Amino acid sequence: MKIIKITAAILATSMALLSMRPIPAKAASKTVSIDMNGDGIKERITFKKSQYDNNYYHLFTVSVNGSRKFSSKDWLYDYNYKFIKLGKKHLLYINPYSDNYDGPRLIYEYRGNKLKKVYDFDSLYGCRWINSINSKNNKIKAMIQDSGAPLIGYSSCYVTLSYRNGRLKPDSSTLQVAGYQDTNIDSTQMKRYSLPVTKSIRIYSDKKCTKYKQTVPKDTRLRVTKRYSTNIKSASFYVTGNGYSGWYSSKDWDYDVMLDGCTGVA
Image 1 (spheres, rainbow, N blue to C red):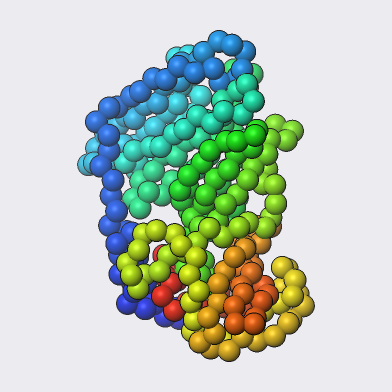
Image 2 (image 1 turned 60 degrees about the horizontal axis):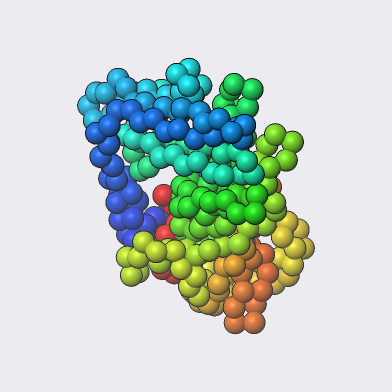
């Protein structure tokens, strides 16, 4: 049986996250008028929470012009939404959430009298939360945060999405690391620290981690700048510092804590 060692700092952070229970908003429904499909006519979009019991909502629905187009049945506290302008139309980001702000993070397009899903953030490796999402120059840029990635703990990355053939797709499989959380100072802000490696680490010259380059000894201070992934099961991270540079594979160490001061497993 595989044993995962969790430090006191990690345990404290995990317990704090698990205790996060947002208070549901008082309003059970809200209606917004906006031109979704770019035809110059505004649609009426209604967000509704129902079946309230024991501080949870058990049904969340989205209706367009009075007709239900989306529903989620779960133990929900509340929801987030945002209309994202893309060309002449507006896409809809929705996030019904429960404990620890967990829940689906989806983008929909109103097309052919239907809400059609054009992107699911669950398709990205390690994506658990969305810190920000905006549009610029007909592209969508989001800052995603993971739930505890190998080596760098709670990290955040930028992903840029472009609309192609009725779907949103990432422009690249390589994402810029915006920062990661240092639990030594109990910070909730994502920063880019240089932190010492707590164990020796193998690094590779290629992002697929097939060409071994060298081993970085324990206590070497490294900084993580990029992440590469083509699926939701594994990723590699580009590290640099003290004369070392290369790609680290999540498969090498699974979820062991590698940098001192970072969290490990959520």
